Length: 548
Image (tube, rainbow, N blue to C red; front, side):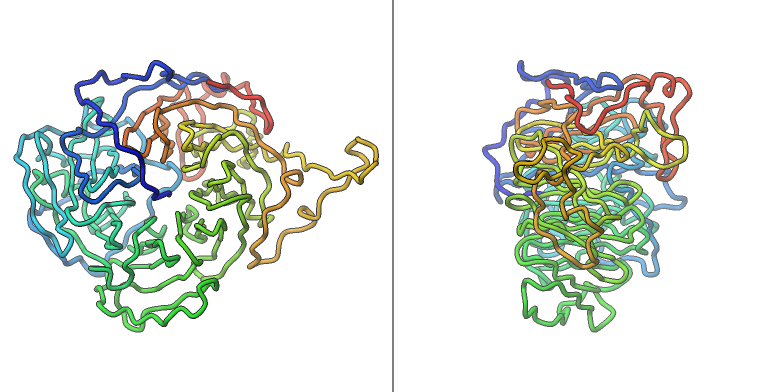
């Protein structure tokens, strides 16, 4: 996630047509499996924006609320306590699990109630909720929501409603929210994490925020209060899969902290001084309090991080241009390497944990293999920094061999060039470039592979960027200018693709007819017979692609 400042935000009218587009933008894009169409857009009312603390890059979190637990009593008072002994499972990463339309409502997840704007202090940051004709008191059922930050405000929109405006906004009066994460299986109700520019972190119940009429942030648990553990800005936040309520927060000073919901906070974490800023180290709290551990990853900012689906590994990307992959349980560096140029800004895991994507200031998308512990492909197609990458875990390869092994992966990337790119990685057709001796025959048969491919890299090795001629090149199957402003986020759901620009305007692109019949069971996808018969086209690693 990048955190650079943007140009003046463009105010968008909530009365504009749902699919209003710039004349130069198309409302669809073509792929080998069919046409993706712009279904609707989500944005924020201009009258509710606050510019006191400057501007931040908008990020989007998909939140799927399941059936309301029995005997849940909505709270309207602020609380700094949280139940002990709680246990929560992981939020599904890389667009998993939350994008279904099979919900028990029509046109939205609740009603609207007009309330007046108010402000109520919570902790030292004055987190508050202000609302003008926004709010609801009957969000008791399940639903799918979009959570996104713009300026000093968190907005919540109903994904399944064609209403353009959000249904809820929460204002933080002393700092900007910059990152957030959702856990659909949280047992104690605290399922939403919010990290601030000040370094402070909140956990709250999304359902309680939706039930509240908008007077204040409800039931917030405050971590790293007043920067007691780290006063640099949060850059990325995530629940730990299968982590018993644990979550991790990355900061701009190169540190990542692990918290546990069932532990109290500490005003003095008592971590030792970091003697070598360039050396990876892990320190644990002396007492059973939060934060429970500090991981010093690198010198300079950690721009983003992501856990593998099972929580075994954690990948980080930083200002120093390195991807680092760690064994989370054993706190050990496994592998990593350098970008071709500049910082890395984003990373993502495949659902099976075999591949990691990175993107950054070199305008490239790199594909890392966990088996080989090295770059196995790189994608060229963006004209500016790559700000978001994700695997499409709902897309089933049309040439699946039926063995359960994934032979082709679909992934996407978005960049500051306003483009959405889709890529196909066909693992059994990657052709390793061969080097030829000077003056030799120009045929591949006389060449030899680069030493880059000699063997898997040793565990714990950070590699320099390999020569581009030694790594297979990918070309996108789709290149589509999706927005007029630089893009910051990409999410795949079962029925759509979501793109967001850094000013907080979100577009929902519906999959081609029949593709949404694909559904996921764990990490496997099942395709209906009708769709399987239609899936005759196969994208190649270096296909020419569709350009819009």
